Image 1 (cartoon, rainbow, N blue to C red):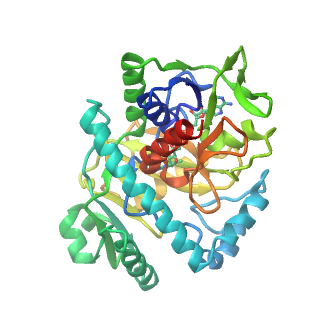
Image 2: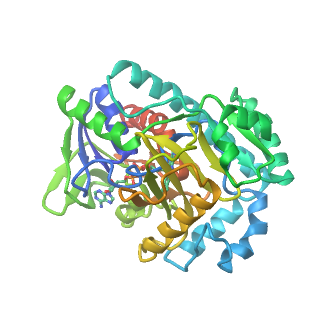
Image 3: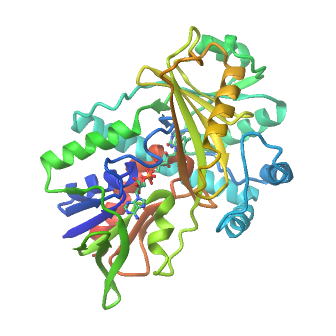
Length: 402
Ligand SMILES: Cc1cc2nc3c(=O)[nH]c(=O)nc-3n(C[C@H](O)[C@H](O)[C@H](O)COP(=O)(O)OP(=O)(O)OC[C@H]3O[C@@H](n4cnc5c(N)ncnc54)[C@H](O)[C@@H]3O)c2cc1C
């Protein structure tokens, strides 16, 4: 069976891996010259299996006016194509019941993903800076603490163990917290959350696929249109040729909707811009991954660097403010954890990426109403965490329903 996978991010290449394991003849197409050039490239690297809490929740509505008035330094909002429709769908998800359902649905995917990644690590000898780092989420006030307790209890029903720690106990686990300016009152700790480089993983899988399977990578090749025959997807037209196949899987992250525009299928993905800065570690750099909830900043020790990521900007695909936003991220990170990194280093790597965000925070995976056309997209803030399970499911759906 010939299958085209569109998009060579962590989601597309992992989908290609499982398809090839199921005996398919896979062609991966990406417009970039290298795999992992989209959101996969510079994300925070956190395999955040225990922190799948829905972004859409009742408390979000109270923050909305501040966000829309431009008073939230962590988020910029500018009217952009699709934002109003997406925003209304997002607000509809902000009920307690839906937040709970979405959190648990994503948690189930994350826990399966952890097992599948462990299998890949055992079976293929890939180097992708994997580390069992653990994760601490810092809580700044009683409201955050109360919400964390409810969430921790909810997730424990699914076998996900997180522990609420007092400030002192959190510092015992990660002494670098003592040198932070943040006056957090408590933290949630998960021992089972890991950190690893999704870009290295993706290129490691590419190497494996090229050397151990018949998979082909067509990079520097833009997918323009879906080819249809008798109501069935039968291939794609790229900017320089046509490729025929029995099935097409769309793994185009934030750009998925573009290719689907002529099909009437809309996964409702909005590109949410975020940034990361990778710096040499400072004298008090945390080894445990950290999220400062109030500041929406994450700190990960990865590849020998301190990677600090954050911000959620709703400005469409506009990258015009990147330099200002990276500067703002650097300033916030320095203020919060002045000893965590060498903030004045010349060799800082700065990066921006688009999270492919759906209103309910759940990826869309599986067949569509067009025969031969499948989706594996919309992984939002957790694409690296969820990639293995959704790739496994998408590959099985292709083989099963063909
Ligand atoms: C700042 C930031 C921090 C993050 N931190 C984390 C984290 O700690 N943990 C976590 O789990 N997730 C994190 N994420 C989210 C994660 O990075 C994404 O969910 C994930 O990378 C999405 O992968 P993808 O393969 O779907 O998309 P992408 O990696 O964006 O891949 C899409 C691919 O499609 C290609 N493409 C687009 N259009 C076309 C076309 N027409 N033809 C051919 N190719 C095309 C692009 O070139 C790209 O390679 C973070 C994201 C950001 C922005």
